[in-house]
Length: 392
Image 1 (tube, helix red, strand yellow):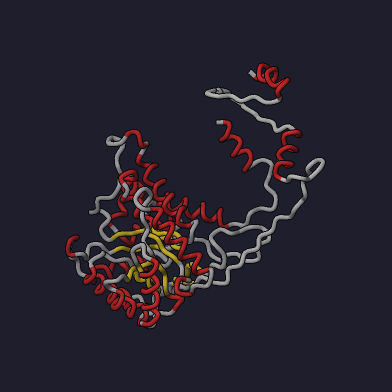
Image 2: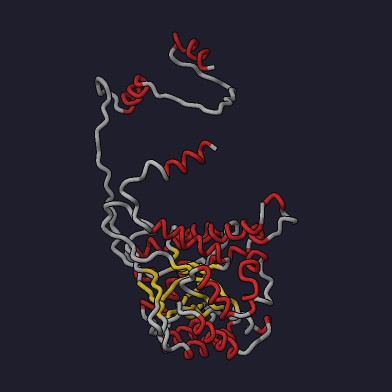
């Protein structure tokens, strides 16, 4: 084929093909010097002679005057986890850049008070097994086996629709978890507004010696929940629904109620992949960029319930129902990993995750992203991996 093309081009030096399909295991195009020169003269008309390449040194001129607040979760034993403090966008670890972010995203592992009774996806049950029946053992298992640096304890059973358990039961579960693990704990809720306020009243007081986080205050509960965080010196998650203006308003309201700036964490809602991820991505990005550009009303760390990925049917539907989607044991965790990684690229500081293997991988991947780019890339390593995949 190439010999015939060469013969055709001998006189005309060009050839135009129409309605032609090329099939080849390996195809290489070469730009002849004369073509490069002609292209350069077309771009730079009137320049006589041969075009020359001028060496230039690449440099970054970035200016972000703002700074994201630093939030600490501190146990009474002194162990802590830190989020926030950013001075540049996520993973801006370029060589020669003066500013670097101090803290990688924090992954927190979900623990529920009624795990054995919940309709959990099979991959979750397979990982946790019998510990699902005991929140304290569940939390300990996540820390000991998967290296969890933070736990989020959700009290679903207090909801009247889920059993209407007394909040004193949740307090007991929380105390057991704090005894079982030495890492910070986030105090989650049920979604029932009346019972959640009661829950935070009891648990915030019982953990006064710790700096934990009440999750969450929203448009229906903020006036009751935020003062509890102020009184007992806890962090507070401020939850809104994909609305930048509502998030700004709630942040301001929290400050007026006495919540310190270093106690505020935002949660603008984490939509799952395929069901609104682009909206969350856009809101997270706008919040983070605004904060770094000096908008103090949005200069706070951002949390996301990436566990929501399991609400997508693509994550939990069995292979019998959708064999073309592949194995559920991989598909579900991958769905959750993608959710967390997408949002971490635009400002996610705290990823609330469910599947322990997914959580572990997000922690490892974001740690690699967070590391400084090496000055010299080995001949073997990145390039071998890329070329090997391209050949396949």
